[in-house]
Image (cartoon, rainbow, N blue to C red; front, top):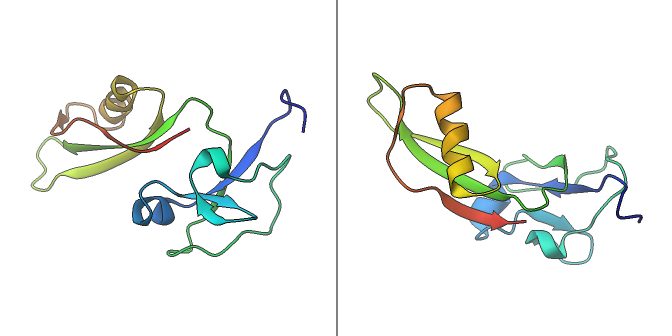
Length: 115
């Protein structure tokens, strides 16, 4: 596959959470971390089964990590776990604050997967 072509991977949030970040599909090994994942030139209709049936096609997230930010939305009684792909922790916090204006970030983002 030419490095300039789009590269696709299969991701499952539930598998990443269950397997310490191993949420990418490998045709050889099953659910793995991104460096071992199978790459595809385009998505198709075939997807492997995941724990919560949440597997999706996504463009390869080069240089990104799957992060979780715990925050409290204004007026809320329960915290929210905001998940996103980010280049660095500050980027994850910025995305959380953009999604929930006026929120209070309660914890430093945790990284569940490094791309």
